[in-house]
Length: 151
Image 1 (spheres, rainbow, N blue to C red):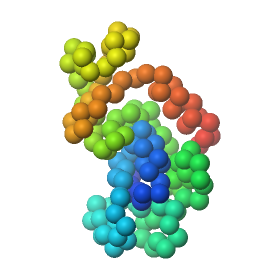
Image 2: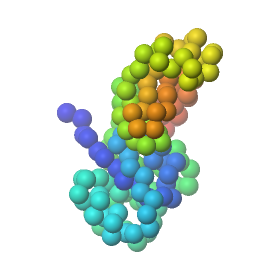
Image 3: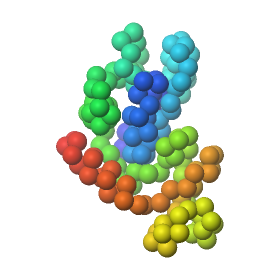
Image 4: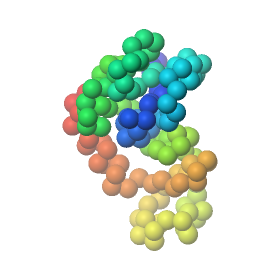
């Protein structure tokens, strides 16, 4: 059985939050400055805190040290012994963290560029913010980045 990990990330690692969502992880972006609220939320929702802040030393906290987002991603995955799962990649909205839903091609005809509509067959949409996703060149780019991390 695969380990299910949910994250809550502080605002200084926002780009890392997007990358964790791209890989299919439930990653909440915490924008408040209240440390107590962050800790309570993490405990209530069984989330691992990911931060660059030094003042959080207990609980389930992963402190990242790298400045580069790809290296931060590598640090998190290694510390929790997680491996990216291709089936989960691109299953979450990078904006609001909701699970994407498959939509019929005809539904997005007026919402995506013509070239995208003509060259893609599968489309997904966020049920919350309504953003539309498809398997474009970014899919291969992300796979290459993950391979380059040598996990």
